Figure 1 (tube, one colour):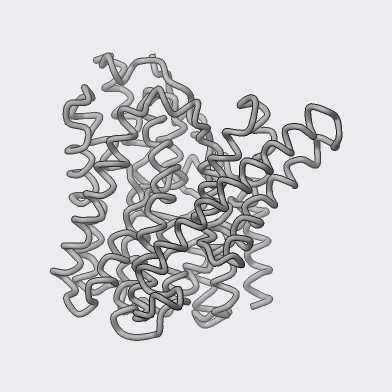
Figure 2 (figure 1 turned 90 degrees about the vertical axis):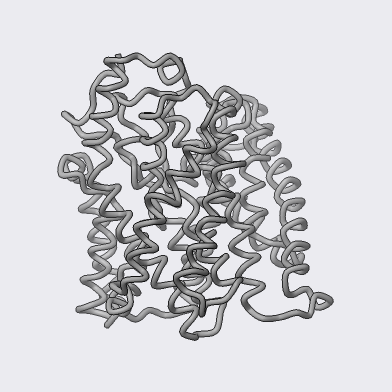
Length: 428
């Protein structure tokens, strides 16, 4: 394992130092670290990794991602595009989970109800980092990029309760009085949400006041913010609540406590960078683990589910949820396609891997998640720039009214980098 860590550290240095040049070849961080993990798994660690280490890495990464995504999308900034993102999250996301559940039951009847729900919910969230060349490419209208960015920032948090509920139910404990099973999971979610609101808001107000009154070295305030999601996660866990929900809700509460967007971005920058660094590690670990499952990854049922998950199960719910919104069909198709599955799906899979007993049904679910993510990394990573250019050219020629309206520029997330020179254009 020491050798694998050395390879990871060296790869981070090389990738970051060459990230602008690498993007010209349409290579993203997830592609690079996934492939590196596969090579490491075949040569250094035989596709195996310490289970406790994997779970801890996955948990902390998800905690930081949930908090940062929620905080980054400050409530005041969500109103302008809420008519579109609300449809995607309130209508499109449940439809995607429902369709994924039905397909899982049809293709994998042996996995049962709860594992089918786990599979569907784990593959519902999208990852803006995989489509960075779309979300950050100025040739695409800002409103469309903003819609994709906001959806990606919130749908992982909204899918988390469903995933954790399914994991708890699949664990097979029906003793609700002991705090387990479906009812116990619901109570944990509620307690976690309360803890997140209280800790996130109070911590945010403390940081804001310390900055305004000169109590603290401003350069150190991002360190205090980095500790907030960790306090929420482990604190809620000690109280019997759900730490992931606490971290996600805390991000929104923290953002609401800040007086300005500039103050908010000043303090959450370190959290974003840390989640990016850990995200690279998760991608590499995923590549290592997937190496030992290569035979299962190529099963025809896996491929069918993965292809439908990335196309029909995503694009049809998006189109249905956006009917009547005024967006053009070309935009609906563009938004529908660019829903890559990435970091959140991997983390959900790793958590399930460590939470459930090893059995064929669980292995099936994990292999389907892995197959879908691998295909998404390749398909979305390679099509993001060229298809963005094509859609941007269409938008520039036709000037659709709603899509061309002024909107807040989306922010970078999860190690996404701006398009390389020659890959972007003017939105006008």
